[in-house]
Amino acid sequence: MISTATKLANRSFSNCMMNAAGVWCMDEAELTAIDDSAAGTFVTKSGTLVSRPGNPEPRYYETALGSINSMGLPNHGIDYYLDVVAAFQKKNPGKTYFLSCTGFSIEQDQTLLRKIKDSEFNGIVELNLSCPNVPGKPQIGYDFETVDQILAAVFAEYDGPLGVKLPPYFDLVHFDQMAVILNKYPLAYINSINSIGNGLYIDDEKEEVVIKPKNGFGGIGGEYVKPTALANVHAFYQRLKPEIQIIGTGGITSGRDVFEHILCGASMVQVGTELAKEGPQVFERLTKELQDIMAAKGYTTLADFRGKLRHQD
Image (cartoon, rainbow, N blue to C red; front, top):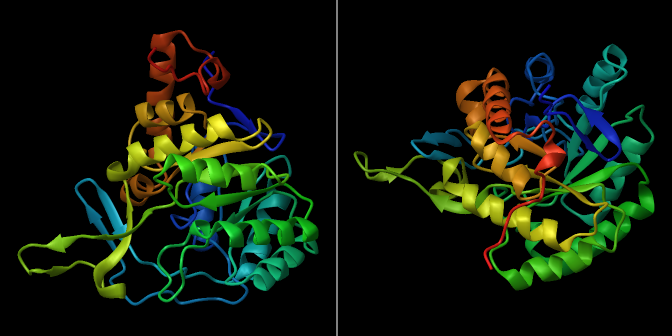
């Protein structure tokens, strides 16, 4: 029997695949579709203290090799997602869900975590440190000192399982420096990567950009980003203490992509652009493709190959 089940933060999941925050997770209807799919669980849209309309349309555009977006964190607010997840927890008491949240200051992050702590939520929190598409706001994940301060403040408030969503890094020294910070804290996991920030895609016929916010600059996802995502997953797998697990995100269009993320060290994977393109049925296809690869290689569990990427002598 070939199993794609996994464990993260000492919680069990029937499948290692789930949605990426921002895709098929805006409201209860979309989360229900993910919950009813072959995905092992879901993560909510990144909830802020109050609801946000996000950036003006058009703000998402699909390309042949992926997508570009500048969503600007549209969401219904943290209270909405706490209520929705509470309903799912009552319906499926044995299932663990992920709640994504993000603030625009250390104080807001602390307030968000207090709200979650005081609620009935008993799942895993994902703190988003990497939204590249809010005009006037830098990516927190590139300010190492601030990341350190945020994590110190967050873990002073919250003692439940918590992970952080990170932007992509491009220099080995930055992997080293960020790993030193992350290893100081009792993180359950990191999620790597968010989209590659501030790309540009052009409609040649119209001679104009394809999305409206930020003069067309937006986060790049899909096939374009897989090599960067794999590099980040494997770099952190080599540098983080074993108890900090990794969710791999970026460029997953096939079961082979899932296999490669796990081979690089991921315990779970999140699907974004391909989920947006295909819908929740994508998880059934990806699972079957991953199982076929595992069967061909003689693997029966993810542990048989997780993190076992070979390096040439």
